[in-house]
Image 1 (spheres, one colour):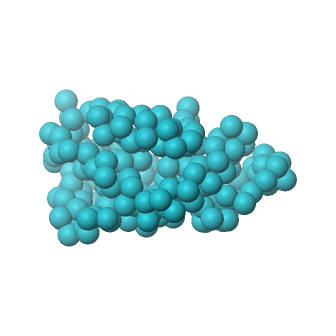
Image 2: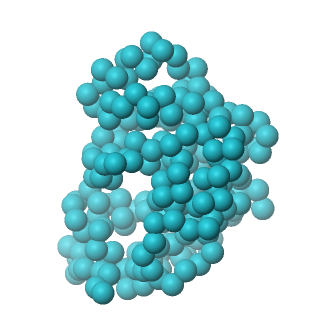
Length: 201
Protein backbone atom coordinates (compact mmCIF):
# COMPACT_ATOMS: atom_id res chain seq x y z
CA UNK A 1 0.00 0.00 0.00
CA UNK A 2 1.36 3.45 -0.94
CA UNK A 3 1.36 5.57 2.22
CA UNK A 4 3.05 8.72 0.90
CA UNK A 5 2.77 11.06 -2.06
CA UNK A 6 5.17 13.82 -3.20
CA UNK A 7 4.38 17.26 -1.85
CA UNK A 8 4.84 20.53 -3.79
CA UNK A 9 8.57 20.38 -3.04
CA UNK A 10 8.83 16.81 -4.33
CA UNK A 11 9.45 15.34 -0.89
CA UNK A 12 7.18 12.53 0.34
CA UNK A 13 4.33 13.28 2.72
CA UNK A 14 1.58 11.21 4.30
CA UNK A 15 -1.10 10.91 1.61
CA UNK A 16 -3.73 12.81 3.56
CA UNK A 17 -1.33 15.72 4.11
CA UNK A 18 -1.29 16.70 0.45
CA UNK A 19 -5.07 16.70 -0.06
CA UNK A 20 -5.41 20.49 0.35
CA UNK A 21 -3.04 23.43 0.95
CA UNK A 22 -4.55 23.76 4.44
CA UNK A 23 -3.75 20.15 5.20
CA UNK A 24 -0.19 20.53 3.96
CA UNK A 25 0.65 23.34 6.37
CA UNK A 26 -1.10 21.54 9.23
CA UNK A 27 0.64 18.25 8.41
CA UNK A 28 4.10 19.82 8.14
CA UNK A 29 4.04 22.12 11.15
CA UNK A 30 1.49 20.81 13.67
CA UNK A 31 0.34 17.21 13.33
CA UNK A 32 2.37 14.92 15.54
CA UNK A 33 4.59 17.56 17.13
CA UNK A 34 4.41 17.27 20.94
CA UNK A 35 2.34 19.85 22.81
CA UNK A 36 2.49 20.74 26.51
CA UNK A 37 0.29 23.84 26.51
CA UNK A 38 -2.98 23.25 28.36
CA UNK A 39 -4.97 25.64 26.21
CA UNK A 40 -3.84 24.01 22.96
CA UNK A 41 -4.59 20.57 24.37
CA UNK A 42 -8.07 21.65 25.41
CA UNK A 43 -8.64 23.27 22.02
CA UNK A 44 -7.71 20.10 20.18
CA UNK A 45 -9.91 17.88 22.35
CA UNK A 46 -12.77 20.33 21.74
CA UNK A 47 -12.24 20.50 17.98
CA UNK A 48 -11.96 16.73 17.69
CA UNK A 49 -15.34 16.54 19.39
CA UNK A 50 -16.76 18.99 16.88
CA UNK A 51 -15.26 16.95 14.05
CA UNK A 52 -17.27 13.87 15.01
CA UNK A 53 -19.26 12.96 11.87
CA UNK A 54 -17.53 15.67 9.81
CA UNK A 55 -14.18 16.09 8.02
CA UNK A 56 -11.16 17.67 9.65
CA UNK A 57 -11.01 20.01 6.63
CA UNK A 58 -14.34 21.51 7.71
CA UNK A 59 -13.09 22.09 11.26
CA UNK A 60 -9.67 23.37 10.21
CA UNK A 61 -11.27 25.92 7.89
CA UNK A 62 -13.36 27.20 10.81
CA UNK A 63 -10.63 27.02 13.47
CA UNK A 64 -10.15 30.79 13.72
CA UNK A 65 -13.91 31.19 14.18
CA UNK A 66 -13.96 28.51 16.89
CA UNK A 67 -11.12 30.30 18.69
CA UNK A 68 -13.01 33.58 18.59
CA UNK A 69 -16.25 31.93 19.74
CA UNK A 70 -14.64 30.07 22.64
CA UNK A 71 -12.26 32.74 23.99
CA UNK A 72 -9.23 31.12 22.35
CA UNK A 73 -10.16 27.97 24.30
CA UNK A 74 -9.28 29.51 27.66
CA UNK A 75 -11.13 26.89 29.67
CA UNK A 76 -11.35 29.13 32.74
CA UNK A 77 -13.42 31.58 30.70
CA UNK A 78 -15.40 28.95 28.80
CA UNK A 79 -16.31 27.26 32.09
CA UNK A 80 -18.29 30.39 32.97
CA UNK A 81 -20.48 30.19 29.84
CA UNK A 82 -24.19 29.86 30.45
CA UNK A 83 -27.39 29.38 28.47
CA UNK A 84 -27.10 32.82 26.87
CA UNK A 85 -23.72 31.81 25.50
CA UNK A 86 -25.12 28.55 24.15
CA UNK A 87 -27.89 30.49 22.40
CA UNK A 88 -25.33 32.94 20.99
CA UNK A 89 -23.10 30.13 19.69
CA UNK A 90 -26.05 28.37 18.08
CA UNK A 91 -26.49 31.51 15.95
CA UNK A 92 -22.79 31.70 15.01
CA UNK A 93 -22.52 30.63 11.36
CA UNK A 94 -18.74 30.59 11.61
CA UNK A 95 -18.70 27.43 13.72
CA UNK A 96 -20.50 24.07 13.75
CA UNK A 97 -23.87 24.86 15.31
CA UNK A 98 -24.54 21.64 17.19
CA UNK A 99 -26.03 22.09 20.66
CA UNK A 100 -24.63 18.86 22.05
CA UNK A 101 -21.09 19.65 20.92
CA UNK A 102 -21.26 23.25 22.13
CA UNK A 103 -22.53 22.14 25.52
CA UNK A 104 -19.81 19.48 25.63
CA UNK A 105 -17.08 22.12 25.26
CA UNK A 106 -18.57 24.13 28.14
CA UNK A 107 -18.95 21.04 30.30
CA UNK A 108 -15.43 19.89 29.47
CA UNK A 109 -14.03 23.33 30.31
CA UNK A 110 -15.47 22.92 33.81
CA UNK A 111 -14.06 19.41 34.03
CA UNK A 112 -10.68 20.72 32.83
CA UNK A 113 -10.60 23.22 35.67
CA UNK A 114 -11.31 20.43 38.16
CA UNK A 115 -8.63 18.26 36.61
CA UNK A 116 -6.01 21.04 36.80
CA UNK A 117 -6.82 21.55 40.48
CA UNK A 118 -6.09 17.87 41.14
CA UNK A 119 -3.36 17.08 38.61
CA UNK A 120 -1.43 20.40 38.34
CA UNK A 121 -2.05 20.63 34.58
CA UNK A 122 -4.03 19.09 31.76
CA UNK A 123 -0.72 18.34 30.04
CA UNK A 124 0.67 16.38 32.98
CA UNK A 125 -2.48 14.31 33.01
CA UNK A 126 -2.80 13.47 29.31
CA UNK A 127 0.91 12.74 28.83
CA UNK A 128 0.60 9.84 31.26
CA UNK A 129 -1.18 8.13 28.37
CA UNK A 130 1.60 8.62 25.81
CA UNK A 131 1.19 5.84 23.26
CA UNK A 132 3.78 3.13 22.83
CA UNK A 133 5.65 3.23 19.50
CA UNK A 134 4.01 1.35 16.63
CA UNK A 135 5.32 0.40 13.19
CA UNK A 136 5.45 3.53 11.04
CA UNK A 137 2.35 4.03 8.96
CA UNK A 138 0.33 1.28 10.66
CA UNK A 139 -3.27 2.38 10.19
CA UNK A 140 -5.46 2.33 13.28
CA UNK A 141 -8.17 4.49 14.75
CA UNK A 142 -7.78 3.64 18.44
CA UNK A 143 -5.14 2.26 20.77
CA UNK A 144 -5.01 0.78 24.24
CA UNK A 145 -3.85 4.18 25.46
CA UNK A 146 -6.68 6.09 23.78
CA UNK A 147 -9.21 3.68 25.23
CA UNK A 148 -7.69 4.17 28.69
CA UNK A 149 -7.60 7.98 28.39
CA UNK A 150 -11.16 8.08 27.05
CA UNK A 151 -12.36 5.94 29.93
CA UNK A 152 -10.60 8.12 32.49
CA UNK A 153 -11.94 11.36 31.01
CA UNK A 154 -15.48 9.98 30.94
CA UNK A 155 -15.11 8.87 34.55
CA UNK A 156 -14.25 12.48 35.37
CA UNK A 157 -17.39 13.73 33.60
CA UNK A 158 -16.03 14.72 30.16
CA UNK A 159 -18.24 14.19 27.10
CA UNK A 160 -17.58 13.70 23.36
CA UNK A 161 -14.29 11.98 24.22
CA UNK A 162 -14.69 8.48 22.76
CA UNK A 163 -11.59 6.35 22.01
CA UNK A 164 -11.48 7.31 18.31
CA UNK A 165 -11.79 11.02 19.08
CA UNK A 166 -9.12 10.71 21.76
CA UNK A 167 -6.80 8.79 19.45
CA UNK A 168 -7.04 11.53 16.80
CA UNK A 169 -6.19 14.01 19.56
CA UNK A 170 -3.18 11.91 20.58
CA UNK A 171 -1.94 11.71 16.99
CA UNK A 172 -2.21 15.46 16.53
CA UNK A 173 -0.68 16.47 19.86
CA UNK A 174 2.37 14.23 19.56
CA UNK A 175 1.49 11.52 22.05
CA UNK A 176 2.20 9.11 19.20
CA UNK A 177 4.07 9.56 15.91
CA UNK A 178 1.80 8.20 13.19
CA UNK A 179 3.50 9.80 10.20
CA UNK A 180 4.24 7.23 7.48
CA UNK A 181 7.76 5.78 7.59
CA UNK A 182 8.72 7.47 4.30
CA UNK A 183 7.13 10.82 5.24
CA UNK A 184 9.74 13.57 5.42
CA UNK A 185 8.06 15.00 8.53
CA UNK A 186 8.28 11.77 10.54
CA UNK A 187 11.95 12.32 11.39
CA UNK A 188 11.25 15.94 12.34
CA UNK A 189 8.55 14.77 14.73
CA UNK A 190 10.86 12.15 16.21
CA UNK A 191 13.50 14.80 16.88
CA UNK A 192 10.89 17.05 18.47
CA UNK A 193 9.66 14.19 20.64
CA UNK A 194 13.20 13.30 21.70
CA UNK A 195 13.83 16.88 22.82
CA UNK A 196 10.41 17.26 24.45
CA UNK A 197 10.24 17.52 28.22
CA UNK A 198 7.21 15.47 29.16
CA UNK A 199 5.06 17.40 31.65
CA UNK A 200 5.00 15.95 35.13
CA UNK A 201 8.07 13.75 34.74
